[in-house]
Image 1 (cartoon, rainbow, N blue to C red):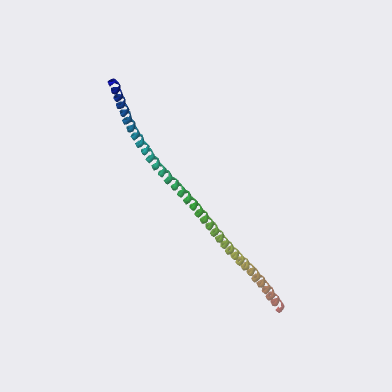
Image 2: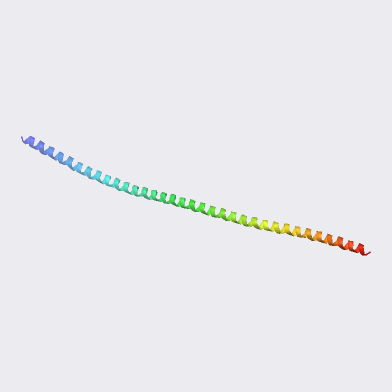
Length: 126
């Protein structure tokens, strides 16, 4: 009987030792889980930050693209306006040049008519 009691005590000691090791292992696993959770939370925060930065870059790139398109439209519009003004100035200069040529032709014709008239008058007087 004494032997059975000592065997039970021995078994109890073994079970307590196993229980102690298991508690220690559980503590280590909890710490590892906590560390992994913390690491995952940090990575999740980094991921969210990166997503937000990418979203902001995309948003900025859309804004930049819209702004560039707006500037291009404005520049194109201004170029058309300038070309239109240049064309109208060229047309006015062309009309002015044509009018000067016509005036010179009329003046020559008038001169010729006057010269003929004067020469006819001189011939009549002779």
